[in-house]
Length: 569
Image (cartoon, rainbow, N blue to C red; front, side, top):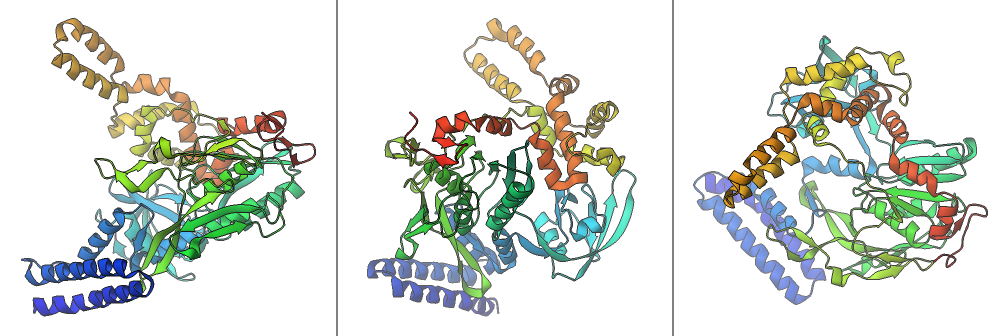
């Protein structure tokens, strides 16, 4: 019976494999075809052998998923197989839309916790709050075995349907039963737009999903026509990319029709393409600064890199991630899909900014290594400035990210900031946090944070202590204990984590982070961005660029809105 069952389960997979072989045969050279068919036959025979002879009854889906994952891991992190159960995840990445309640949940301390509620969606309207613990969904109790994805699947559903949620509200809120209508949820790509001063607009673009270029255009026109914007800061920090066509359309907002924006080259001639600006620009003559950091990747790098190559914007911030690869989604058998890397992209100057060489040699851990410095080439912008390939987008003006203390890192990773902000917010109403920018946590609330941490048994260590332990080992090996022992003990006493001392030492950054978490509960993501702008050193540096420094960097004159390539050194 087991063998018969195994063969029945195996048959669809064999058919899939044969179908794949037929497809390869139609397009591939004979040598490649032989290699593919040979190894597919080996895979099929091994899979069949395991099911016929293995002592236990293996799960075919698990085996095949493991095999597929291992195979794709040999390529790059962006080639991904999506089983039927994860198709909605793929759609959400492309569109930013899903059917659900408009809330983000994740396991914290073994309990499913609401960590963010999206403004204007059913979860907010039903009264769901960050910090609420989800006990059950439609009568199904959630235990520690549930992960965030499983709970998310329970909460998602067709727009117009309802879901019953039982929650526990901490700090005296009790147990509540909520019936929440599901709706079509779309997370906006433009998280925030507004004015930094009388003439400078600001747009924060969080991702490149379908329609994001339209959102940027709408925000741009609103700031220009209604708020008097004459120059713009476009923030792409933390933006991991998305759809290539959207990045092309966003660049088109700032460059003339017909300008080549990006090109792609792949194994197939279908991917040897050039993408040009097809429409009339919205802000061709507007001085522009683009912000990037180490998490700005892919489509973010197309926008920032091409605007840099064309001497159309000054790039400010930190060196970007360095992803110069293009993916395309392909339909596979049984309603599964494969997102596969099909090409590399090249910005307007002709450079590819891909940092890691996934086709080359790997290190001892099997990880891809950076492209060798000897292989890097230097390209030139439209005005003759040198730009380097293979290292992401290097900013014209670098601004270091402020150091985060080890204590704050520990408080965030242990969710202590989240938990205490939930406690503080429970004692406030909207009038107490009426302005996201000016809200400050009172001294009484701040003083209570230490008591909260001690009551919760919070512990932390530091990098300094880790290095000291290594030093002690080396001193012992070299037999310098008698000489350096007392000095190391004194140093250890000084560096030993001390909660009271370190809370005082890092009060400003920890207090600001707590305040931001409270603001998020009352003013959502847009309020959080608005607040951060008043303290952001990269934004402050961007404001200083407009004018003479912009002209000196890229030859852009704010007076006549024209670039003058070659006028600088």
